[in-house]
Image (tube, rainbow, N blue to C red; front, side, top):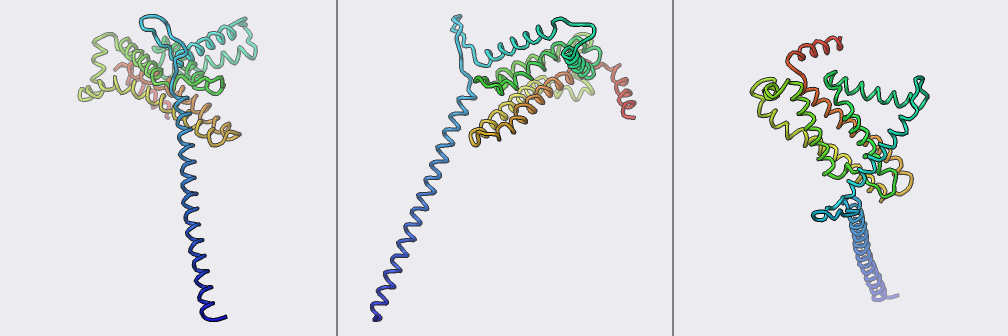
Length: 289
């Protein structure tokens, strides 16, 4: 074999190696481009699915002045109200002096909720316990209703529902404050507590409190809903069941508890008079010792 043949063979092999590198680079680029297209397609599909699940539809219209569109969250709320009424009728039938297991469980739940709310608001807030207990029951079922399927969505991930609940709470807080402070004079004076310098901040709380109640409930429920749909999109078996125990059950019940707890806490703060403040301080000190 001559030098020219050897050099020709080397050149051919070098050309083959260069062609192989070019083909590998092209295939690599095409592979990356294909992967990017797949990821983008999955993202668009997921985004569309989330939009369909998050956006509320109008199941039907009322032909009155408009017509009036009835949103899905309103229909779901009607369903929850019906569930609560049926449960109340079933659980309060044939009550006995010596309770059975079912009646004892219901009495324990009612006693616990009543004691919890009265412990926050005191005896003066006893008149508001039925309303707050109903809100707690409604929020608990509303946050869990998406677990049962049938295309149901938690109504609390509709900001209109959380705004309505927050407005109802703030009206109740101000009414309780008005009554607790003994009328208009005491109500206006409550804005100057603990000192007149805090008056602007106390006035701002009229907006801040309902806004915080609304956005906390709405953000947590919507965030948990979106995370669960992301998990279900990635892995449809077993894993969503594990995460559902937290995002649907634990977090849903916690948000119901926090909403009612903060409402009762704000009411207790508003109903507290100057005469009761030293007593509550002394009671806290005795409890701590």
